[in-house]
Length: 445
Image (tube, rainbow, N blue to C red):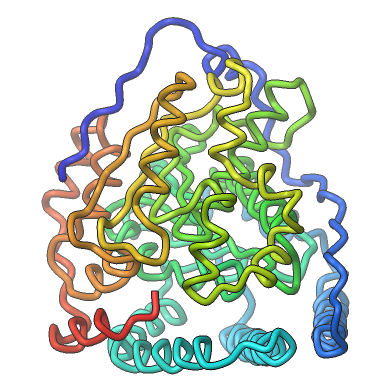
């Protein structure tokens, strides 16, 4: 479905008036104080926490030699590689994979998760095997392409890193997409955005894939704090990597769409209330929410039926009393007109056959935003599932509806950029069609 242009009002709004109050670029951004995690009730989870503490402590010793933000900022006008060596990156990835795997099985054991989770884990394994030819090619690009800047540190927490995907032609400042990956708040990782990062970078967009603490390393408050700090880093430092600080877009997928929307709404509330901020909502030109859920109250039962059990989900969300605070739809409904006026145009994207998070979640959020006076619209992808838009379609090659819709909005006022996109080579197929169809049938999402 082709996107419609977003209507913009010429009358002064809180968002336009707030542009003069944007924070100045600052490479030494303050780090938000860590939040207290919820108490774990079993010895197995306590052991997981101890494992995390040892991992975090080791990571902290490696980072004490320099300020995270200072070490990540390149000299203006240069694109010098700032990440560690390939061997160190592989070692870190292996360490994190082991940690996440062990924590996952610890959670499965202590929460008494049985047949449903085991069957979904098996389905996920087969799904990954079927798509492995594409994942290997994307992984090769991720580790060996000179256009990828991996593991740039943006804060002092264990997962406060981001990856940058830089276009080959950066002769002029490029638009930027700050992307928060999904992963059910448990298995999210910045590398999950490699395929989208590659596709957009090939079309002149810098993509910053922001990593964040997952449960049980942190709860939803920590995730939102990490994402906000990553967005702040992008807003204040992206010019040093060839990005245009006046063309920054925020995007999230699945759980990442929820986390990014929480960060956006929280920032708008702070800014409208006169609280000090390290980045301004007015620096974000538009928000793209892909396959997200925005009213957590209404999704608890749905997730429980899908296998993300109530006890686990409420632990992630810091208890039932916090569900309203971390439901962007409810926050928007109860926010002042000044807060809503600060929000950028919001574009939600959803597949009509998404069973992980139904498309009605995006439709309801759009309706609430429009009633409150925000600029919002919904793009529905007919017959698409939770993973079709983000994984299977890009792996298929050829036209990518999601990328085309995002580019049509980013380049709406740039005829030269649109012409370059039109002349760009068509992405090639990475996985055979029979594998994609079978993976679609087996997918646990």
